[in-house]
Image 1 (cartoon, rainbow, N blue to C red):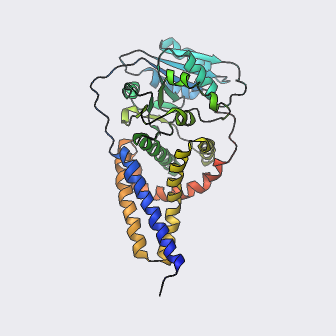
Image 2: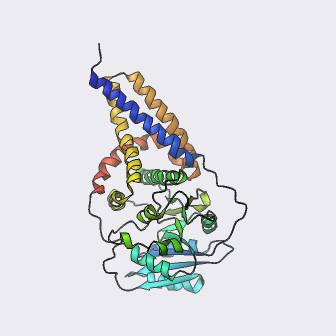
Image 3: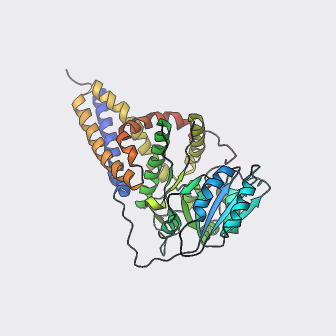
Length: 373
């Protein structure tokens, strides 16, 4: 039975989508899979200011901040904790911690910033109050995976480096939602770390991010994005990062971990807020991210259509090619990013991403919330 033009078009579209997906995995994501930290001839211990902003997070501060304060670091470091108008017991928790840890510098904010929404104002105050040139940012709900977190992150700096991107993971918990949250976080990390390794940095995450104070001041801080509630991490990095001034660190001891949401509703709200900033990225970044997302979204519908309307053997062949490349790259990348327990589920999680895009696609146009916590 002769094939009609539209049946051939379906197959050609599936072949093109598969080729693009294989390209992304082999050209971009393999950089994380085969990542090796460059051997440095000399290693300098820079003084570091760790900035932590918190609003009504007394439990997180009590649980996680000691992990930041007990870091093993030969040089000087301070922890600047910005208490942003909290009405819980955060103030008293910080006062108690300060009695034990002299490196803790507490900044109390008692007034809301006008015309500056989100986390940018408390973070800007924390940076202003910091003493050192190298800034290391994390959140109150995060804890370093090791006592060498500061050392590992600052060690990525070199003569031309002004930004260091780290990986912010989530704690492993039982249940399906935990796997979905961790895979989405891994998937995002795989993208921004591999793009940076390819010389096209486009974002970082505030859970584990470092840059120099001079870079922040030279670019007038968050002044160009103060009207946007989110973006203190990804939009700022999107604006100032280049292929020459950005480095990444992928090391089990340089990871931070935070508690994932425990309800679908809370997670959906969190992700919807994060995605409202994507439309402000540079055009080249939106193109690269959009092309990958579109082809990932179209892959399974076109696979089904090729099996039904064209020839199942060609469909299975192209599917097998992508799975082999994808599985190999994900295995090595997950191992490096301490997410290897997700690998046996990678195919099911990849199919889940089709539904994920449907759920969160409207967030790209949704008006963002004005609160940051």
